[in-house]
Amino acid sequence: MTVQIVPHRILIAGITFQFTGLAPGESDGGGEFFSQELVVPPLNLGALKALQGRLQNMQDSQQSMETLCDALEFALARNYEGVPRWLIEQTIDLGNMGEMMRSIMDISGLRRKELEAEKKAQTAPTTGSISSATS
Image 1 (cartoon, rainbow, N blue to C red):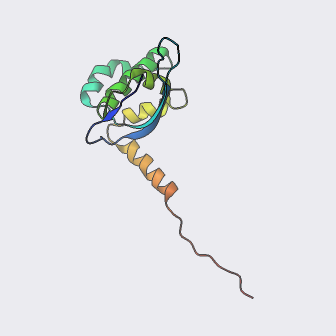
Image 2: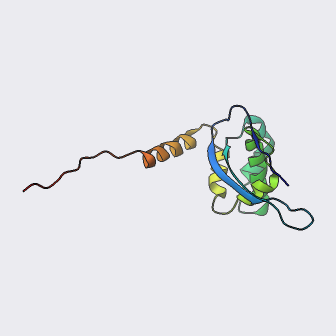
């Protein structure tokens, strides 16, 4: 099974995550490993309306994980065609679940701007003076 994820011409800004998973295999049970960075934009109004009741009742449960998968499908569809559900399901884990939820709920863009500012601060070269001792 070959995965073909096609980005739309212009990507909507969001938070980038590495999506990785093992494609469902053929009859032999073996599948192809897939890994790609994808930009997860915030949900649009239509998706929020569709998921509103489920999003408000999010808890630590399997139903909440399904809601998050559905929300990620809606969000990723804004930027890409062909993102398979199995890839979303295999990428989400307890370590990144909260961050993914925050990214798709980033209506105002404030969280995204905060993360971008943190990244810039971490990668910005530091300037300083080097002094040498003189006798």
